[in-house]
Length: 281
Image (cartoon, rainbow, N blue to C red; front, side, top):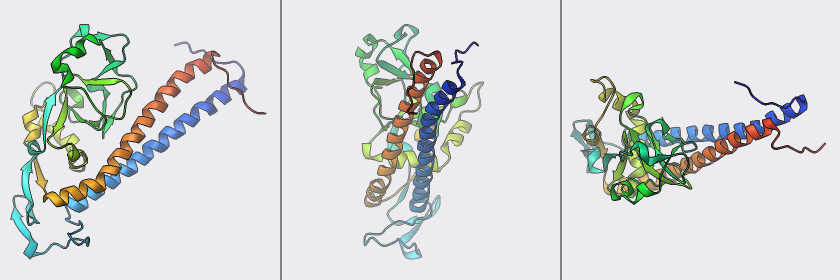
């Protein structure tokens, strides 16, 4: 591969300095997201594994024989129960776009399985384009994506990877082989997402898919996953605490995608000399 580069070493250094500003910002945002994700998982574990959550008086809940009951998962707080994920959300595989539906360029995009990177990350900076005409189909409209939607890779080597759709400017739709969690209540997002991430379900779902040439799962397998469902007031309090973390990660991911796209657009123009950087002496 032949790469155009300025001959002047000073120009090369200044280009590297400019690009490094973007790289440093991207790195900082990713590190912040990692810290936020760890905080969210710690919070989930404290509330729903160790049962350390505020009681109705705002004081830390103290488990004791009088307010704990036996369950299949051991002792749980009174009023809590073991349910399944399908009670909170239905998982549906995306629309089967045909090859003719994809175009070279369009403001309408389709998330494919390749765009799911795992641990909540969905890269939308280089997603495939689809024709505007196909979006008039009612079934396609059903799979229009909004920021904060939780998606899951359902086949191939990426099976089990979980992503959250970041804020975006283009219309986004879901392609087949990727499932979307249709929540029974939109406020459940941070609870369902942190349940899946704290329980290491990316790897567990991948293991569910083995048994054929390529890993593959179906929605009923995911919807049958057991989940500990707390009393309504506890769930509401948890969502109020966890949702701001969830939303901040979303905002950071949107900024990361924007910085990557800007950096990748800027670099070849700087290298070819199409753009020049003026520096103060």
